[in-house]
Length: 568
Image 1 (tube, rainbow, N blue to C red):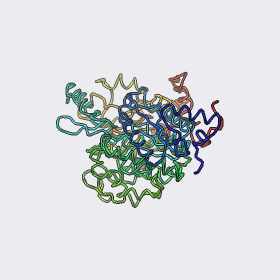
Image 2 (image 1 turned 90 degrees about the horizontal axis):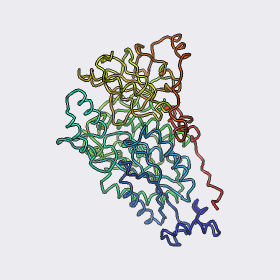
Image 3 (image 1 turned 180 degrees about the horizontal axis):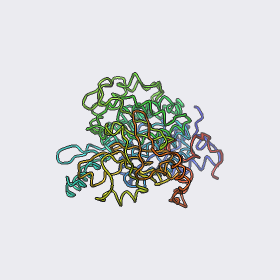
Image 4 (image 1 turned 60 degrees about the vertical axis):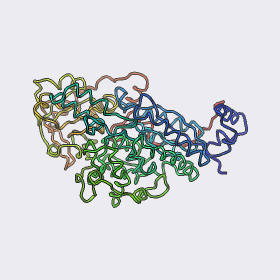
């Protein structure tokens, strides 16, 4: 039998091997499970403080069944869990901490392959980043989306309808009582947001990259077929260890480009940009923000909120990611998958069962709707906008800016009746980037000023160094880099300055002459750091900018060495 990585822990007939085996045996494992068979780590982000992932306990048991069935030895281990809806100041602050946790756990333990159990927004990318830096055979099982939300006999979607209902309350069109009544009907089962938010986007892109079994991207969390898929994943990871099919053989440039193309086709989250860039940095693929332009020519095929009207349950039943990959077949790159073959095999036999949910490539829901990258003197290193969720008329726009210096400034003043803004004004928010918030929170979809909401305004151009929820919508320009706290040009913008946005030309321009900007730059000072100790300080000191993935600079790349020193 081939000597495995785990044999460095459990194959030694000495004091160290005795210690490793003996303490594991206190769980009731017999001698023969240490006979050299593949030891499979099940990396679980289950947590009661992460409700999106609370179904992962059951999925872990299903994975174990598959591992045992194929002659492997499954061992489950916990890692930190980033609950998107529960953490302050933002779960994104802790994505890199999760990645560190995953990386070090995989490296330190005697496992030969790993199954990543995640789902909530930052858990999937954080786990992938950490696993990529160790580069064992790796496969993903996602928690899956919730059942469709229900309110007064109609479907409602996570996040997307929160923003709509909230604005309706501010406009006096919905009572607070009705707003609160919708709360209980929105989240009806285990699982992640059932809109095409970041969680469902990332599970969809994991499938498009070939890092999971087909249909993983969309099966509802409570569908029995997800448990069956987890079981089959347990079987497959044992085979992957036998084949030495490592993560780096799957997550190639071709796979990452397929993720970009799929993100455009499904109307995926803008957050996919920072996650894919960070993952590319871990696997050593030279992917840049400009590479996301390959998705700008891909049409919107999936009619899901926030870019459309349906939800993930509907998308699943209409054909899911295999059907989308079939529509994209003429554009996908050649790329190996965890199944061992090319990604094109994921579309074999795929059918579309509802053309109002999944549109044909040549008759799409919207043409050329992928993310656009904007550059210019306001965003020298780039910014992004999501045309599929924007107002077409606002994607080419020039107007005066109204500036909020901080998120507290915005919250204190956005509802002022005397706020000097019109529907044409471009709202600008500073201090919300990776270093500034810190963590680059999902506040870029700023509320429309209350006085304009009452006039019926529901969208305006908004510019910031923040992110926005994948469930959000509007003409929102995000991820401006460098961020204001790092001294980027965004820090120099003043109320009354004119800004020009051109999505078609990929431009974001501050119409202020260089001499004035130089004077402002000379007078500018950064805010004091938000943290002076702990992980927060580590993060602020080392986080990179959005255009490179907002990873920690010392975590980029990998270290595949087996730990060489024993613990006793």
